[in-house]
Amino acid sequence: MMKKWCLVFFSVVLAMMSFLPVAFTFAAETKRVNVIILFKKHADEKTVEQLQGKVYRQFEVIPALSANVPLASIDILRQLPEVEYVQQDETVAIDGQVADWGVKKTKATDMHVRGVTGKGVKIAILDTGIDTKHPDLHVSGGACLLSYCPTYNDDNGHGTHVAGIIAAKNNHIGVLGVAPDASIYAVKVLNRFGEGTVSTILAGIEWAIQNHMDIINLSFATPKGSPVLKEAIDKAYQKGILIVAAAGNNGNRNGIGDTVEYPAKYDSVIAVSAINNQNVRAAYSATGPAVEVAAPGEEIYSTVPVAYDSDSNPDGYTWMSGTSMAAPFVSGILALYKQQYPDKTNVELRQMLRANALDLGAPGKDNWYGYGLVQAKPNKPPQLEVKLQSNAAGVVNFSVTPLADNIKGYNVYRNGKQIKELQTSSSFTDYVLKGNYRYQFSSVYSDGTESALSNPMTVTVSAPDYKDLTNDIWYAPPIIYLSSRGIVTGYNNGTIKPNDFVTRAEAVAMLGRALHLDSTKRPTVFKDVDPANFASGYIQSAYERGWLNGFPDGTFRPKQPITRAETAILLAKAYQFPSAPSLAFKDVTDKVTGHKEIYKVAAAKITKGYPDGTFKPYQSVKRLEFFVFIARAENDAFK
Image (cartoon, rainbow, N blue to C red; front, side):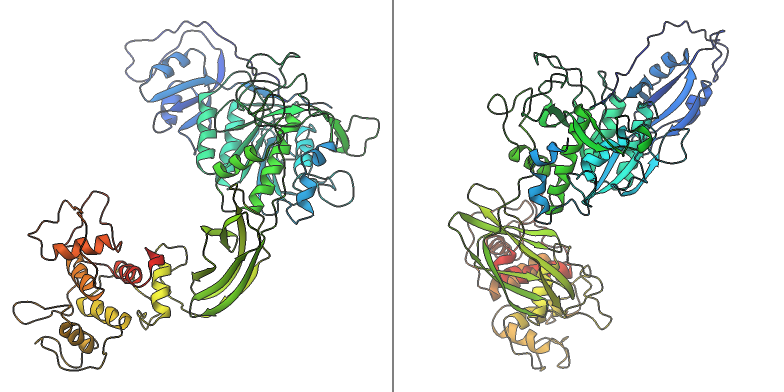
């Protein structure tokens, strides 16, 4: 754990020479201090330099910088309108001392035998560094953010101990980590004495954001909060990163009062208290409403650099105790969750952590254990029979049969990402472009819990292949569906041009293919539609059915973009949508041609209009919009 940050208050006298328009002159006061300056919008190095300050680092994630400034300039900085906050760059420090019982207590090994080991999950350990030569650890990378160090190697021992709890390898030597295959990154923000500053911690948070970490472990604490640090941590949380921190080692034996320290006390951080092997709070463990979960923290056996192995057997392993040791258990458990559910957000994974915790102490959430002891609960098997039924032209079909009465639905994953939630149909159809795909299914039980994922099924799809379309675009499935039925085709250059406007001729041709109109090229009643026109047969067939009339001058204007109102008329007549209930669009009155059809189309859930309550009847329709309208008219699954 960390020693307390120290804040020294100074009394200063500032002398300003009024005849200087820009620069400031100070009295004989020569005391200088390190500060962090948070600006409201943009960090301004020039302002700091004008106050005889020396800028050390400008942060990118938040508008802040660290600098060394004359003590007397702090009051001036605080009064500047562009400055939000100025604080001294205070010191942070670890305080950990004093086995392998914790991995079993959290049930992590139950997950390992199911192949859940944290693989692919990136964890930034902001600490004293990690011993890169330790045989029981693999360090994927990192950075030293102190001024003196060329590498992120551990010169204290604390960071390596934390790293071993998270990810000591499953190699039959030493100890076993909670998530042995997780990717750990040594972000050295504390020196060989276990001390750092707010600015080094800020730099570490920034590094984690920029390097796309999944989890940040903070095994240190301070009794005093920092608005700048809070802003950086909140930013990381908003980016989807899980932040885990030690609650602090300043609790009392009676467990009374709010003694949780920072940064664990921030809402965006998971605060972790420590228990012993009897599931009882360690006497030193902080207490308070911010405690979210508890984890093993008493006499934890883990890795250390041999040079810092202070017990009687200098073999690179030793015991330490503290909430510093409890926090990495939680980071490891979250890595196991993240591997299982890579598409879940940090908020959802945090909720899983709470829901799966073993309640300790007073029923429900309490100030000692939070929601309880973290558990790496292995999820139930999926209890589904899933078979690949067909695979052709972008359409993949599965049959799905539940094998238990307490299953209310299933979730579908493609290439590790959830694509459908709580499906109840006995079949599932996916529409994808050319490529290789790995499908997995999970059961959703009546109590809302989700099973583990099924064994993956690999499917190869040979078509379609549109250069300007990807599976993750919302309108891709309707287009692939229409393509599989020959209703839409791409261009000779391999594109589908979804953002081009659809012409009146193209619209009628697509509708004709969908409803099997006569496609034979022939003369039409319209003087501007040549018999050789690719859509002439469809246009004449639609006219004969009363779906379209053309313009008063006897033209059809086949190359003109179709409007939303014209689209509504065409669809409403072709699909014979019933009369609509009383709906209202602000820009659709009985004076708008096609107003009845517009409301029919809206009632049929082909389109809802725009969020501002308009329909925009005279706006031209893009190809992607028309594709979606046709798909919804043909298949309720797209509504």
